[in-house]
Image (cartoon, rainbow, N blue to C red; front, top):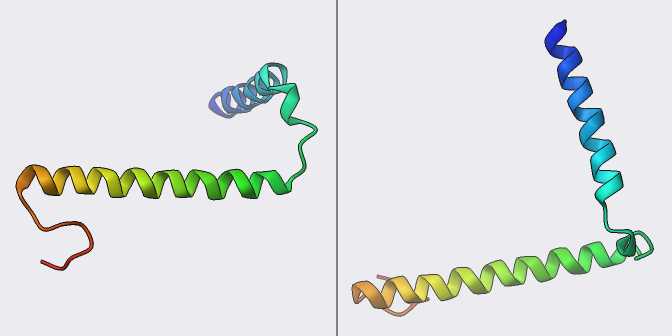
Length: 69
């Protein structure tokens, strides 16, 4: 029971801290921009993955990315 109290207290404090430290300039943005930011993040991750894969392939002398081995 004591552990449950600590978990609830921690969750409440975390929520309060997030509200107090949150960036107010994002509150008035439309929800649609969340989708746009998620897609942009996905594209960035994919580009970074392809770049790193290319670096690793060239480092080991492998075939260019996109070609079967």
